[in-house]
Image 1 (cartoon, rainbow, N blue to C red):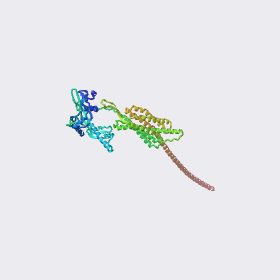
Image 2: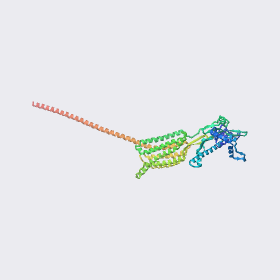
Image 3: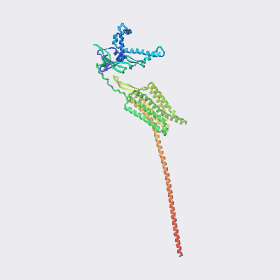
Image 4: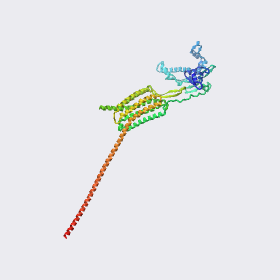
Length: 587
C-alpha cells in the first residue's frame, strides 16, 4: 500500500475495497500505524467487505443476540463456559469471560457461523436417523449424515442457511456480508489506530444492501467517509476505448457478398439441373451428382457466414459459441460433398475407360460412387465429434494490453479448441491428392463433354487453394479481418472454379445443341413448304398446258370449219362457172 500511495494509486481521490484475510484483520482487530505515515494515509478511508455473521434488525439475529447476553447473566452457564476456556497463568493470559463481556461484546461472525454449523449438524443427524429408522436400522451411516447435511435449509441468526451441494459449504447467496469503513478509532502523538466500522450489510432474505444506523436509537444511516475526510465520492477512473480488433465492416460486407454469390450460384445451377434433367448433355452429366456438387458448394458458402461472426454482430456468447462450432461442420461436410461428387465422376470414368481398353464389360453402380463420400464423411464426423467431446470449440477473448488500472486497452476474440484442424487437414488433404491423381490419369480421355479435363482443372484449383491458403490462415490467425478474407477467398475459389468447370461447358454444349435442333426444325419446315410450292406449280403448269391444248383444239376446229366453208364456196363457184361455160358453148 505504501508503494501504491507513492504511485498515486491510493490515498486522496482513491478508494480501495479489501477482502480476504486482510479484510478480516481490519474488521476484527485494531491496526496500529505511525501517525502521518504513507501506510496510514493509504489505508484510511478505504472499505472492507467480509462475511458479518448476522444482519441487525432481523428477528432471528436479534433473538440470537438476546440469548447471547443471557449467557453472562446465568452463573451456571457462565461457569460452564469458563471451564472450557484455555488456561495460561504462566503467560499472564486470562481467557475467562464475565457478565459485562457478554453485555458489551456482540457475537462476531465466527461465533454465529460456529453456532449454525453445530445446529446444522444436529438437524442433519435427526434427518439421517429418521431415514435409518424407516429402514429398520438403529443408527445412520456417515454417508447418510453427510447427504442430509448438504440438503439442510433453515432460518438462523445469519438468515437462511443453505449448503451448496457442489462444494459442501455455505451457499454464498444466503451469506450475510458486511461493508465497513476503515476509520480512525483513536490516536496519540506518535501513532494512530484504524479499524473497520460497519457501514452497510447485504440482506440476503431481501436481496438488497442496507446501511447501518448511526446508533441503536437513531434512524439516520451511516455516511461513508473517504480518504480526504469528506463524504464526497471520488471521481471514477476515466473510461478508455478498448480496441477489440473486430472484423471491419468493409471486409465483412465483401466476404458476405462472395458468400451470397456462392449460395446464389449453387441454387441457380440446382434449378437449371432439375429443369433440364431430361436433356442430352445434362443427362450425360448425371443430375444426381450435379445436385450433390451444388449442395456441397452451398454448405461451403454458408460456412462463411458463421466465420464472419464476432462482437461486432452480436454480444451473445451462446451465439458466438454456436458460430465457432458450426463452421468446421459446414465447411467439412460441404467440402466432402463437393469433393466426393468430383472424385466419383473421375473414378467412374477412368474405370469404364480401363475396362474398354481390355475389352471387358464393367458395371458401375450408384453404390460404388457413394463409397468415397461415405468414407470421408465418416472420418470427418469421427474427428469432429471427438473434438466436440474432448475440447469443444468456444468463443474466447484474450487481453493483449491493459493499463495500470487493469483497464483493457486492446483485446482479440477467437475460436479456441481447434485441436482437430491438423487431423482434418491430413484426412482431406490425402483424399485431395488421390483425386488429383485420378484427374491426371483421365486427362486424355475424350468424351462429348471432356468431363475428365474440366474436373481435373477444378481439382487443380482446389489443391492450389489449399496449398497456398492454409499457410496464410495460420499466419493471419491473430488478425480476424485478414483471417476472414483469406478463408473466404479459399472458399470462393473452390466453389466458383468447381461450378464453372463443371456447368459452363455442359451449358454451352447443351445450348449449341438446342440451337442446332431449332435450325434443323426450320430447314425441315422450309423443305416441306418448298415441296408444296413445287407441287402446286406443277399442277398449275399442267392446268395451263391442258387449257392451252384445249384452246388450240378449238382453234384448229374453227380453222377446219372455215377451211371447209371456203372449200365449199369455191366448189359452188366452179360449178357455176362450169354451167355458164356449158351454156355459152351450147349457144
